[in-house]
Amino acid sequence: MRNIIIVDPFSTGYNLVEDVIRRGYKPVVLETIQEKTEDLDALKKIYAAFYHEPQFIKECDSYEETLKLVKGFDPVLILAACETGVPLATRLADDMGLPGNSAKNLDYMIKKDAMHEALKQAGIRYIHGKKVKSAEEALDFCRENGFECAVVKPLRSAGSMGVFLCDNLKEVENAVTALLSVKDFFGKTQEEVLVQERIFGTEYIVNTLTLNGKHRLNTVLRYTKEKTDEGGYIYDYCEYITKLEAGHTKMVEYAFQVADAIHYQNGMIHGEYMIDDKGPVLIEVNCRPMGATQPAEFMDLITGQHETDSLLDTFLYPEEFERKKKEPYRLLRKGYMKLIMIPKDMEAENHPIWEVARQLKSTFKVSVQDPSAVVRYAKTRDLETSGGIIYMVHDDEKVVEADINMLRYIEKKYFQFILNDGMSRRWFIDGKTEKVDFKKIIEECHLRGAVLVAGDEKTEIEGAQCITPDSLGDAHKGFDYVIIGYQKALVKLGESECLKLIFDTMELVKDGGKVIIPRETYRYLSYEREGAEELMLIKGLTLEAPDGFDNGRVIGTYESI
Image (cartoon, rainbow, N blue to C red):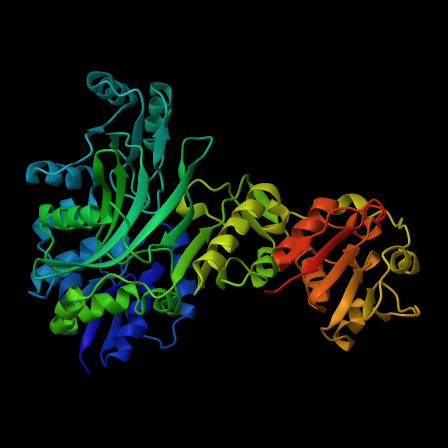
């Protein structure tokens, strides 16, 4: 069985291991020397997710030793699975005469200043910038070019780490000073940083494949970022473009020109672009598969293939590359990735996003910490410090768009339903309760038919079935009315368990039926009345307007169609 060397298979590149096995080859994972211990921890988690365990080898202290080690495997291909693996994979493939790219062009592939210099030399649009070693040098560059605002970033990075959007020269000064005082994404001391003209427009990802200098489009995505108070640039969400829109063909054509300009001959480029009133311009190229640790199955649902799948087929089956090159650009389904933006440093006692996302029709996978684990989070400043990712896909674009908007709204206004620090319901743990009068609710709301009463204690009420959290499984969906009257039961639960109990109880109402949450109950929920209303909206219920006789009760109607 022939070997394929995979350099650093983390982020989305982890899928390469299984893809190689499926094609009848043997994956050999080459781990580069990692400067950051957190990278080693991330690798362990990804390795644990492999279906099959590959053979592992490690980069040696010298390049010559590493080259000798790799030669011993007589590989068919050497592929970089993520950003850290690009330099070594490129050099090894070049020295061994395997399909890849010339190592002499490596700076164009990995350094943000060099790639734009290559565009300049090729006579295509580029972003004007300069490497600087001090804040004073950065300010001089901005003043010389009339830049009142600018972008400051490391010469090498990934996931927007260390990228600052500066609205004025004072922010430029602060950003350069900050970057020169810390290590970059790869754990290297920064002696220089890049200052660039700031471009305003819509941001895109164009993923392309190249074989023997010929290029084809793989996928196009549009992404939305937000500027932090510190000037950082963080991902909010990213969406797959199902069909090309006006202006996109020019961007794809430009992406091919970018690949030519950096002398790219073989492999995949994950390029980030901006479209403004002048047209497309490159932000940066990343000569490896797209990141965000996307599951292969998620991408398959959206595009019919996945990034690493296509990369392997490009090298192993050249005729497939030519066939795909002639196919029209069409995606099967709409897909989104929502990245959790953490508003401040915090300690999360649990992760109710698991329960919230479970209610949304388009949720494919939630990638956050264990829902019951206590985790310390830093405020989100870049992709590395996001709180996790929710992967979303659906046949109906309107459904997934509604779900992504719902998540964004909750994140902004009801963050304790995303990650909970244990403080949102602390105030009511005083032992005092105001008993729910279920009979009064039934009478005042004129409830007739199948009525479910859910409370802390087992009771009997004429005209209703009564349950407690422990006997929830005794009731089956089909009730005309569900009254949620839990109190002490909610006090005992963490936020995730509390939401699960509420959602599971709501589940018992039938189409066209109503859920009622009285004031005596919603005072035990995070955000109280608004929290109860938001939970109904998450579950897909329509809120009913007060009629003057409901005494502050929250009422929602379940309409599945």
